[in-house]
Length: 446
Image (cartoon, rainbow, N blue to C red):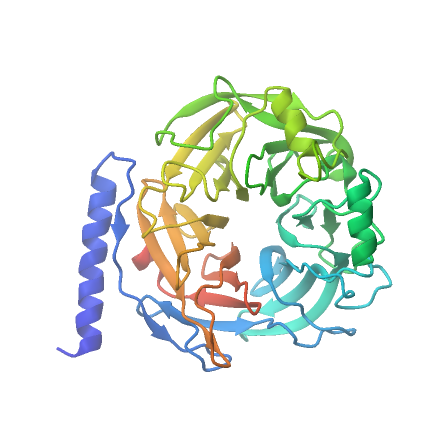
């Protein structure tokens, strides 16, 4: 028997054993499938960027420093991403770029929010049949640290700044802004359309804080996560007019009887939920430059503390979101809020950080589970993971990129999303900044 056949047989045996264990027990504790990964060459560059399961393949696209249609270049630091339009195998993606510098916009400044700032979004039209990008263009420019975001019912993208600089609030901020040459305050959410440039107008009703991701439920409410180290909140924004986000009501989640959910909580623990008002969503700070003006209002009103909330999405079961460094080991949590009965449940606590560490962006569409992007500080090769509803974990991909002699395997995964037909998983590698589209026998793997 040759080595390839041996590995395939071993892989299939492991799959059967793993799925039998996962489906045959009622335990919520994670069962990890030790599937075999192997180096696979990128169909675009010919480089062995990823390790994947047998019979999977991928191609890369949208690399940092590639020229944009209409002028400018694609920035680095590729982060959150979503599919805003689909026509068969032709997808329109909007991708965030978490740029921190204030050395100028990456493309035309005609509609830049703050022309000194290098962050924002690009729009990529991808043909999966041809396995190539048809169009690359700037969608939002002049923002800072665009981390994640979410798809709206308008088929637009909400792009979120993960920083707070408010020139008109505190003198320290004003001085910082002057030193960086900034013209505007930062820490907002921006709506980016599926076609054409964004108006680059901040949605002030969604608050000024360290924004991370958003998602919208069937009733038109928008949920927002906050990535803040000491304490953060989970928010709900109710627009005055559904699908129009310029004005509305911002509230923070209160888990009844639990003011602090940053530490050890048993899997399956459920809480009733209330919502406390944020009276001043444009308050940038609570104390000296703490970037906590919104969250501390919520905590003072009874809201619940979380730790570093990041990925957020909607499924038929509710609103899922991750706490990157919360939980019993500090390795992360996966939460689910059910808007139908207003309850919050801890679905997964990271018990073994060697298996999964620091889940960040999340996606759905592959089997009956969630795709988790790792942003671990301890991983030499970051993983793209799949978490089943029973709690089993499967490694989909590992980052093994070495580019121009630089080992970039520790660069985080981000922006995962799945094609409407469920055949392609698309995700970003943060450094130097590019996307990959992965396909293969998903049913056999998951």
